[in-house]
Image 1: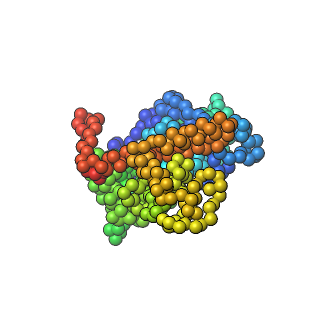
Image 2 (image 1 turned 90 degrees about the vertical axis):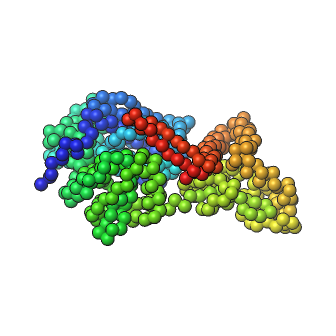
Image 3 (image 1 turned 180 degrees about the vertical axis):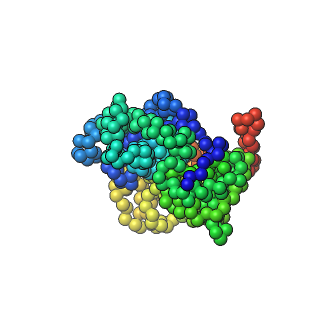
Length: 475
């Protein structure tokens, strides 16, 4: 028997909830191997459309003929369209703070999460509602033998018929969602929390455990799920501890490992914090201390990647895990660090090889880069350490922000390629330069903060007061 929720547990009324209903078109069905070709999204609240987002996306690969036949999106249509690295932050901003809705959400959300991981964006962990799962919960098999979007659109007689184009399908999904919400309203589901609790993945055992959140405060902080032997199973942060923890027992948590964690948990401890920044710092420290089994991210914060100059007569760039003076970073993954290294080698004339070159009497055979004019072959004794040192100084000045002349050289290369009508090569260099500029900007801002003995930051708390944080040498 389901326990009735108390008044303060009713949460956010559905009429006041902002939904972003979205759809993707892709080159195939694998989030880790295929690419997005189109994104369409509709933002709705209280039954009214308050915004739309739509764009084609250059998948940077060919579109299979069968996909072209299904969606009508051809290679010509996506040529010149923005790439996913440009589109993704705009979509995340459009969807920020909203509940994500998709038809078969595992597919669409999987692609967006994979894109976030690829481009170094933190997944914001929004509440997700799948209209397929909701339809299967609401509709009988006799009423809806199929829960395909086209079948539900026909069942409900929606005004927009889906056609495998992202924005049109998103608009159709909006109407299907509203019809499904009308159905669940008749069984007493009137808030977002009740809606996600109504989905079938939430077991009665999960719902019964919401008493673990009963005594938590409604303040910012860090929560720790503990197991039967007092071990820390999971650590997280929340702007409202009680509301966030209660979601683990009432929301349709799709991650199997967290459903398993909830089943093991016997207690939830909380550390109240003055504001969300303090909570995030404390969370990182607790993750490092306890390394909870059910947390996947941020348990090893020392595993950032850096670019450093090797200590030898002809230094080269090396990707390492431990920072030292003059290091460039941090990078969230080795892939991002290697991409920055590749861009830097086009910007400053450091050697690309990894052999160790003696200060005198080097006698190796020059590689192909020497023939291409991209290296002066110090390995073969054709460049002295003194002649090589300006490249080292250029790298250090670029990382420190004191010398941007190498960037002017890269800009000239891009202009020369464009003038020679080598537009694809120019675009590739341009994208690498943009990525390098973002990395340099972030590294210099962090280095500047870490160099300050003390910073006192303040912002209004929204209730007539202020939130303060003291940062000493970046900590």
